[in-house]
Amino acid sequence: MAHPKRKQSKTRTAKRRTHYKAETPTLATCSNCGAAHIYHTVCGECGYYRGKLAIEKLATV
Image 1 (cartoon, rainbow, N blue to C red):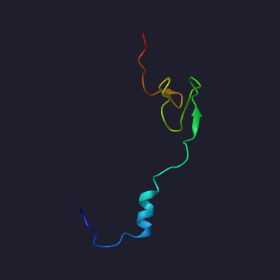
Image 2: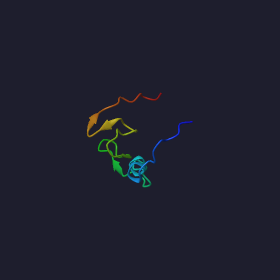
Image 3: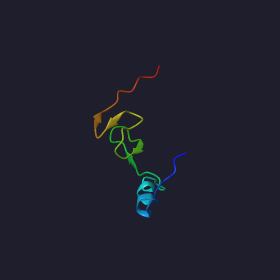
Image 4: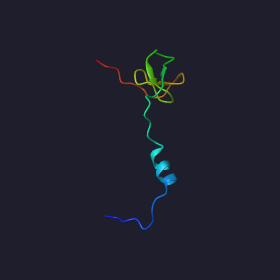
């Protein structure tokens, strides 16, 4: 295993840990179908993002 030569500072350790989010993400309602989705992501139900078709969904038979 690797062995560090110097002690890692508290600031550097804190920078590494900042990406962890304890809160639940904020949800938005889709303007096309009204389903709830995470902000800044494509709607999983219809494939629209900000009023435009981003992903074409396959029709179920």
